[in-house]
Length: 376
Image (cartoon, rainbow, N blue to C red):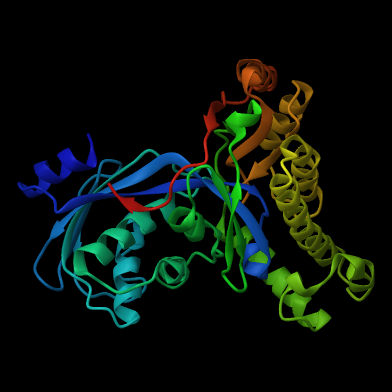
């Protein structure tokens, strides 16, 4: 059932409109966002759709095609609404906490973004609802400020210690572009990313592995990075230059912390190098950077799982220019840069590799850089 039909069924009326926000693939730059570094995501065609209509002041009701009963709530504080609806309540709370008069609303949601795949279904949900409430209430919240507000909803209300990458991608990406984001200044640059013109494609491989993106593991990585920055006397690991990496590592006693720092510093540089290649029209040459990023996530940040590593290896053996895990880790998806006409062969190679190891079959599709949050 679509969000529109669900709204009609649940509320017996027509919505004021439909709003959509996409999931995202992060081309490169993993776990660099909360280290105030650089990321390079692009938006997916898969979106969360919100059908939204007015309700009495101070009343919000949300239902969805992917959960059972709807939930109603008033003005709440962090932790008072739990489960999937917390992402909606969190947006309402963050807007109110920022001083906005948030309109009461009835909200029906439908999503094409696979949950638990590392493609940021949560940010798509947050961004669609945020965009709808801003439009419905005529709220004055500039586009560049919206990702931080959505991130605050997830960090404080939901309690997930995410960086700003996902919300920025869902809200600020543009079709045919990758979003180069400085996670300290929030400055962006839209980088040309029309792969079809080069005869190329990004194949997304959903590992369908049991997603183990446990907040504890994610939080442990973040805590380790923040502690390392404190020891090194820098505001964030983004301030450790690649040329000074060896010296920085010598100042850290903990071997695990050294590996974490090495990943962040080298990953930031890989983002900058990828941007330079894309701007120079040398798209195929980003492949080794993608593969190096995966090795760093596997060996230094230790966030991959066997299904993810097998997908990367199989894609490379089948002729991909580069491949890497994308997302927070512990499951999720792999992206592979391939010649567009090789998609069936690479898909088959990954499926065979999974079958040989007894893994649940992967799901593969071509991702095209798409538009960010908007009213339909």
